[in-house]
Amino acid sequence: MTGATPSFTFDSTGTYHVMLTVADINGCADTLIHYITVNPAPVSAFSYTENVENIQGQVQFTNGSIGAEEYYWDFGNGAVSYATSPLITYADDGIYNVMLVSVSDQGCHDTAMITYDMMFKGLYVPNAIAPGGTIQATRIWKPVGVNLATYTAEIYNSHGMLLWKSSLLDENGAPAESWDGTYNSKPCQQDVYVWKITAIYRDGSIWYNTDVGEREGLSEPKWGTVTLVR
Image (cartoon, rainbow, N blue to C red; front, side):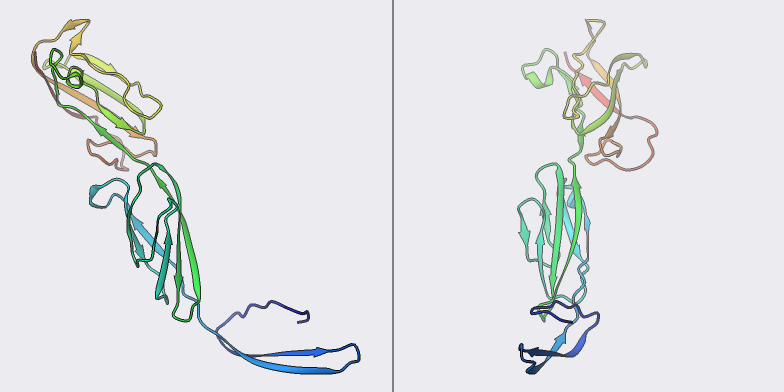
């Protein structure tokens, strides 16, 4: 190899002698030999678990690196860590580039990176409605959710008659309509009514009347009861 400052990559570990020979325009030459030790590089690897302790946005990163003693994490949201297997919480929806740099005791390093897609998901269904009450929020029956792609809610009386139905979502994927406790503009009597809901989140997971959607085949709608108080 020639050149004033050449670059070379050794393909295996070991000790190598590197020889430099220089010559001037008159053909006079001199030689210098140095021994170089190539140390093994670590291997960076990690996995993650979402919704730790049933908290959305809380992610446990598990370090699987080999041959390293120090670690540097960048979670793509402005937070960093030097822990071996850190637990962090994302506050917002987004796509984050998560990077792990592992360093061996000889100072050699390796980098692993993944793209983590964070999406908050949830659908809360109230169990009571008081149209004539003093609290504004309880005067209507309106599920509260986020990041829903499709959604259908229905209200039935004790005889199985459909009283109200809605599939409208706003730009945030939240239910946009509410039931005011009436049927054909007439007040319904005080009673216990049945709601049924089917919902799918924007990432394709299905709501099963829990805070976090599951990735299974959609079967029957989930249901519950709502008490109307007059």
